[in-house]
Length: 284
Ligand SMILES: Nc1ncnc2c1ncn2[C@@H]1O[C@H](COP(=O)(O)OP(=O)(O)O)[C@@H](O)[C@H]1O
Ligand SMILES: [Mg+2]
Figure 1 (cartoon, rainbow, N blue to C red):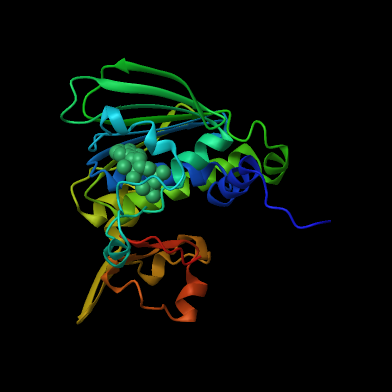
Figure 2 (cartoon, rainbow, N blue to C red; figure 1 turned 90 degrees about the vertical axis):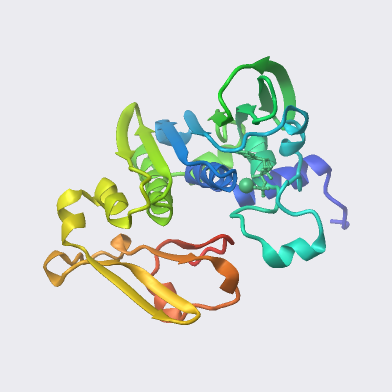
């Protein structure tokens, strides 16, 4: 076959598939956007393993009415504007790819209101195109609803596992962020049932209690070891409640002023999921 540059539509579908692998990737990207927007409360809802319905709502900064449509364009971000900024990124996202990618593989409805706007904006984006835009009221913040995920992507659907497994991936994402950000209140409703609600009081033990139960959280031992510029803190279980599975190990690298540090291979192997808070670099 001769060498040809791919049409734009094909390029954007390939790129979207790289960012959004499964329903849990949508949840991850939307939670990160809410955290970047300074939200102190995040509500997450999912149905049908995330294929039917995903909603993430926050009380963050919201998006000014004039910028709502731009947010869905590729490489559109409010987090980086010049080369220099790349060296001091303090947000989880900065590549401007999540919203356009999600809108390529699903129908996205966003309702958002910024502080200085009198009213909110509702926008519906399908196949990457805006099909509805109107004013609607809402307190400051943003809600994003994602429907028909991968409906037109049979190859991707085939790769997905059962509803229960996909729900499990979504729940993992939510609990990881709830533990990494104990100062943020997370509410999570899965298949119509409230499965997680954290206090958002900043106490890691309370966040662990909300996820693993009060009994286990009470027994966890706090660790805090500092050797400038490193600070290691967290919780470990006493041997009496040790689990044989690696899936109960959660590591987070917080404050990526040191994004350049490379974690020892052993730690990477232990890690089933992890990320640099403030600079997304996945360890798994
Ligand atoms: N929940 C939200 N609250 C406020 N602004 C948001 C939210 N989600 C997205 N945005 C805006 O839309 C832009 C594009 O989002 P996204 O595609 O995820 O790219 P990125 O997060 O890499 O900038 C963000 O830079 C931000 O300005
Ligand atoms: Mg983002």
